[in-house]
Image (cartoon, helix red, strand yellow):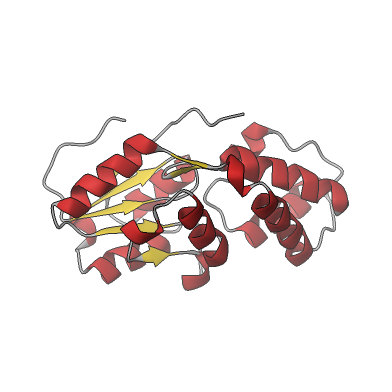
Length: 197
């Protein structure tokens, strides 16, 4: 992790792939769900990573258009979520980022989560990896109109922390997330953990 130097007033953390090592389980869930719902394309880890941070329903709509499919976004997401929850025990905290967040909280600095995931999934996953009590501010795709790379999630997190966007540092594992931070006028740190297989 290459953390930018500077005095930051608040810290914003993406969730999946940043605070929690969950991307491998999400990927397995997408593959399972696409197979059940008429997805005729090969869904690779590279494709999955290219849409990291995009809202789940938006992802299905993008893939429908890209591959000429007619999958029902709501059903695909429900099936993906069902697989994910059934395999929640495979998700682990990413300790370097979690430890950094704990240190900032101990110093009295505002910290928050800004995730493109669905609120219920984010909260349940945070509870499973025992970080739910660490974050009082959690912003998800349910709270904004536009998902990453739009800046909406990060701007709302900054507002709820009462910290100016220019004084925030964002931790992200996706390029779309880094782009969203830039569009919000925030410094960022790209997190690249090795996700368990």
